[in-house]
Image 1: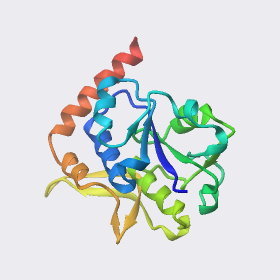
Image 2: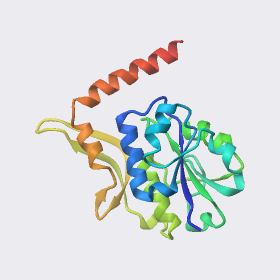
Image 3: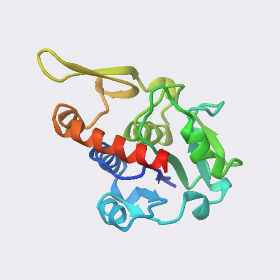
Image 4: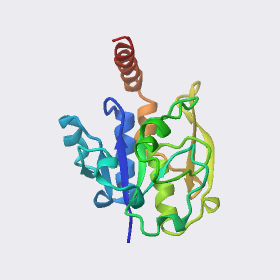
Length: 208
């Protein structure tokens, strides 16, 4: 039985960066095997319905702890192909990375079903789509040590500028698993405006 890949949507809104990672996850496993849970906003539901199945409830209201694997960087044990035996789904937190990491997966995902099988795919933070890619390979029989990973990624923005992403990315054919649309977005002026707007939103929420 092929497992479902479930993204527990946890960000306040779907910015372009997050949407690109979600879109890439859909391309990696297919729309029919990708489920977005905890989607409360009708606008978000309409947007994500193009990429996978939508559930308003949290994954913890849909699955029992025996049916799932939760991916959490803080889990003590690594994910193995054997972990998928008898499991219906693997749960990935729909959280954009923080640096340094704040352990949000443990607080916002694992804590909802602490008796579930919880596994890591490495000590580093992975992008959402990167985590989906690795989980898919492991579900198909690959072991983590067989999946090459690069720690940190530098993207050239112009002749005189570059950006460093302090996350881990799996490699496919010696290239990092990152969507070309995200690289183009990082090179655009659009990201500056989006980040400023998101910062204002978060600051407003923190001070309310």
